[in-house]
Image (tube, rainbow, N blue to C red; front, side):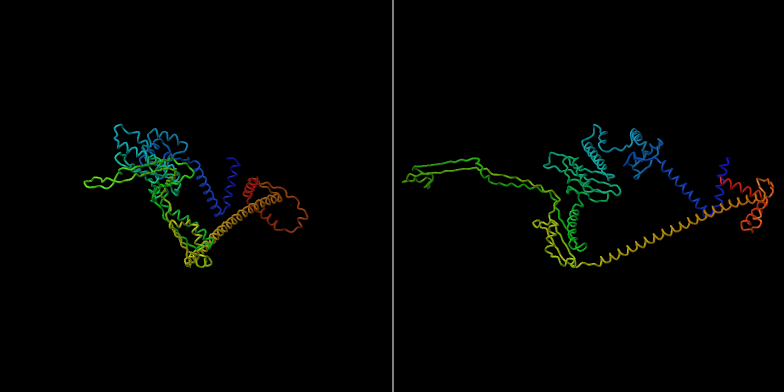
Length: 524
């Protein structure tokens, strides 16, 4: 083995022997943590990136896909309760093509149901298959919306018949299961409603109901829009507007607002026709008829005599008769107004406001009532009601809540102080350990430095006495003459140390020479 390698391992072994038990323990723990970190890093970097090859698979399809992947020797993972199969990203598209060539997944949905229909299918089978296909396509489209995990669509399509006066409108119900932590806002719900209603002939948006997995009605049939929360949203909006105004007037927490709104659920249509004269316009038509008669003779009519024979009017004189009729058709302005009232409008609302007597002592209630009326959009003709009262508030709950909040803040502050104290103690202990290790390492270095100095002293002492030890051979030299100044000088501590070193070199020269060679190698 080369001398450099031997010297390195020798220095390493010597350094290890100089460590104390706590130092060795720390070194072993550090090496173990480093090895575990390297192993975790290598495992994480060597792990392939997985991508979903198929999602929302049934149990049968997932089992068939897994069997095919195992037969091909492909690494895979299951996710989302076994309905999603993950494969390496670099093999994603090749595996999709190979699985599709094998006929996987086998479940059919949407318009693919119409591919296997036979020519002998009855009208009922064709209608049911078409309805299933339409439901599947709608469900697949709804699942493409962000936040929707799975969806199911049920259509109620009435049978067309010529023997009814009025056909029944089709309806639909949509069930959606959202992803974990996801929600559907009113815009997304309205999008689902419009999607379904536009995909089915003669279906109105009011005939679509949407329900989530929690059992909440997102939109009800007949509402035509987001339901279940539409009323509360309006009430919350009015309450928030009035409360924000009162907080600026009497201060936060000194006023309570309650809003109750009634909404119209009926869709009505109203047709109004208004006629007004067209001033300055010529008449559309005009006609005049005149009738005149002059002379005597028997007048038609008279008194009947016996046997229903008219009695002659004897002695009648000549007379005249004139009649004139005039008809004038003037133009008339006609205005026809057709109004459609959709459901969901506010038919009536009531607002109740209570102000703390202490905070609102100097406020005129009539002025405050007018302010609330304007802020809430009260319509007296609609029957809306506003009530503003001034009462003393019960502050016991607020005081108890404030005390609880203060206690919680104090507990949190104490916990933060305790955590800070723990961290300081841990830091102090760590600092003490580091200082102890540093002192021990420095002491070990100092000891090694002193030993090297002693070796040099040994060499000087051996030269002063004329002895030089190399290996196992010893050669005596003539001692040089001692100067008179040195002979007259009194011995010091260094002289005594030199004497002891000389005695040690004389007693065991082989060990001293070996130690000296090791020190020289370390110096190099």
